[in-house]
Figure 1 (tube, one colour):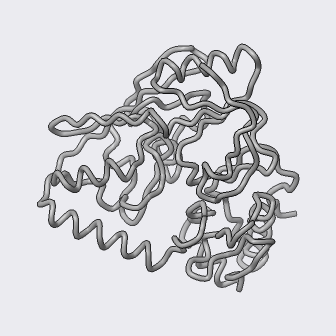
Figure 2: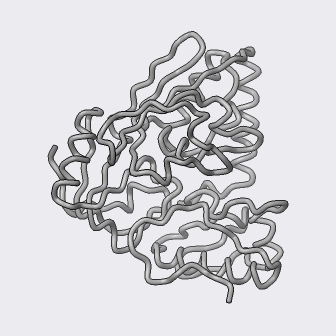
Length: 298
């Protein structure tokens, strides 16, 4: 498996920020992916698995090891009568759109989530009243410690709010299978999807590069509400700005850097905590080295 050197990652994540990967590859199939993982292990390269980069803040220093991009080739989709299996690099919206067109209910409210199947499973991605756990059946992943492919039932993954136990394992998702038990008219599902997409367009700053929701929803409240109540809409660090449209989004207004975004996140944590006593927990995933630590109340 051939590794490319010093590949920019700013155009491979939705924040449009961050430095280069020391090494980079796009495996064409699962065997090449496993080969790349073995090669990285042999020469001591830390590995970062990249999908759509939609929930990611990559350091301005980049990634010091190997970035493996799954969204280029690991995208096979196989439908059966009651379900679908998709490669981890498949765009989630492809599955959503195909299910809607076929009259298969269960994923229509996930329309517009800009991630891959693998990333959606790792985060148990969700929106409105739905999440990945609602339809997830099986996950195939490569366990780096055991050096083998494992097939796990959804019930074994401890799926919670934006969480999955695979986040804490040295593992790479290869594919995920979803099972559906309800059917509706495609026209009805299409209308639900249109409504969801309209709500996203109205409430979210989709016109600017962003990472999606920056913070997890705190119990009994909303991060965006707490940020807005603290008077922080429009706050900027460099070209990174708290969105005027939705306060739980940080948008890149031009030349924003990962350092700008990290510092803005810390300012939001501190201000919201001082105003409400609630410490916001980032939903965005940080990759690489950052000089500024996240806020910790004293």
